Image (cartoon, rainbow, N blue to C red; front, top):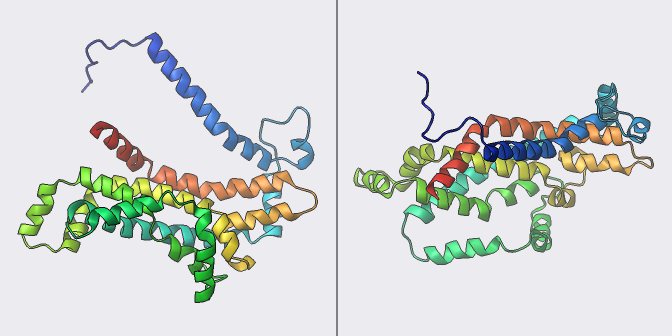
Length: 283
């Protein structure tokens, strides 16, 4: 069944042409750094430093990746990063959505004050919390343990705020009230009714948190000192310690460390866009 064009629709218009041109330029500008990182990952140092610089892939991708594996435990670091990122993402999705459900659909004493206090913590720079957090971690004896990165990241203020807003707008209050009249407990309402209705919000927050944790460098480099527990970002830093920088090797490690992020984004891309367009329509 063919779809009829909208009234006033024109196949060609100057305005649409400029929009497509702008989007094409923006897409190329966004993708070019990643493409050039791949080009450098396939080249040797003397080729990268040549004038003019190369803009096409070379033939040394495997050779550069072997150098990475000779200098760091690349797959071990990738495994540590995956454990940390996946665990924190699952924790944030569960705890923040539970908190969001409570703040948006339940009534309890001090709700407004507590929600305001959580929002206030978003304005505190991360660096200010390093020393108190480090003191707590050393007191618990968690240095050089992945728990030192995982446990503090299981809940964050942005996740609570995001889930509260989405559940408040996306889950009808009448549905929650009907479930209460039928005798459902608060947790059953959350698990059986709210969770299936907020999957796009889960996808969006999950992608944001996974990328943030995967790329985090400051806190892991403070508490993870032994190479066996390094995450990939901390391990890649070791490639810069050589007297002569091998840009091909460094870019090779960086390129392969980026691949899991692309896979995660493409896997949940549809839900991510659905969540953002839902918000735009409601606005």
